[in-house]
Length: 254
Image (cartoon, rainbow, N blue to C red; front, side, top):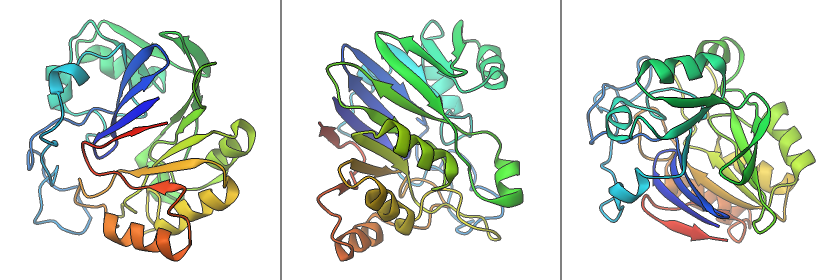
């Protein structure tokens, strides 16, 4: 298995016989306005360019595209323009499936529970994109568990905090690799809506044998946790052998 972090939560996954593009956010630096009611209102999104070492033509031709949800930093207008409309796309809900089909894509499927996709078993999982009223406003979000006889079990948690849904996935599926969306993204009021450094270390304590990959960092204006701060906290908690904080464009092999 190889996982390449493109930027933010955009991943290119080589798993078993298949390749997957997950949550494509492909616009040039500064294309979109900052998220409202957040810090750093002087900074447009994305705040960095795509990494220069990425073969964009290759990642735009996966076997399938998976969308954890449809917020702009996970499926943007540039992705809608650049991806072939004949590519198979898998969504978390019928609502999202309808929206993606309305964007012109011809082969869109909702993963309501679990199914085989390109020879890989994929199970959809739940989450909470924040707490209280904020989570309600942010809407449904999902993750995916990948399994194949020749690969370690992979859990891509999506835009969720460390709450009951991902805890249950970790306890029941016992994934070997866990990808979490970090950055401690936050509005001016309320709790973080993506993983904090403390939550990531908590995941390590709950599943110490798993390898954890933290992404969704330093790419959008409301993500306040930096890679340096996260790495420092990981080292302070003696977890640097289990938690990885890749740079954009970096590939990890398991």
